[in-house]
Length: 164
Ligand SMILES: Cc1cc2nc3c(=O)[nH]c(=O)nc-3n(C[C@H](O)[C@H](O)[C@H](O)COP(=O)(O)O)c2cc1C
Image (cartoon, helix red, strand yellow):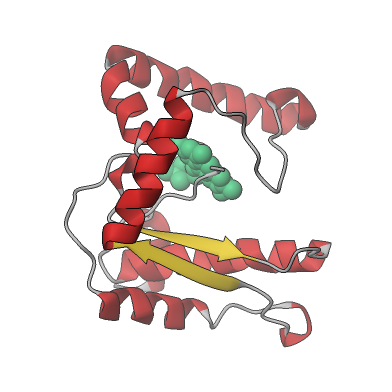
């Protein structure tokens, strides 16, 4: 797939099929993403990919935590619409306005899928050192996009997701 085609074809998938992704494909995607530029070629990102029985345990733990209402404890704090510029706020409002009616027309499907980490057959955790600087976080975002474009190019759907 051409890069321009991949840029336009990538979109957030929020309910995955349970088709396993071969480990060779996952490795190729990570290798592709390693081409991402970084501050001083620091490449400070690390990737841990969970699949199979390990991922099942993670999903079960997540589902249990969601049901018991466990408090979020993500490394980057959650931000809300009010924390963004008026322009960004408008974009977010547009998104909520189009996305929410879809969720509300069939809430079980979305929330059930989300509660099970979208039933993804593989999850890539993007990691940084304990005290990352702003440029490492910038580079991680770039790495994340290259990773998702590489996945698209290799026929694998993706979703960037904030979870804890
Ligand atoms: C850092 C980041 C975190 C995100 N977290 C979530 C999430 O937790 N749940 C979700 O449904 N979408 C999440 N998204 C997906 C965005 O909502 C999505 O990219 C945006 O609506 C644009 O849609 P598209 O990716 O289909 O072009 C996240 C995206 C990014 C970049």
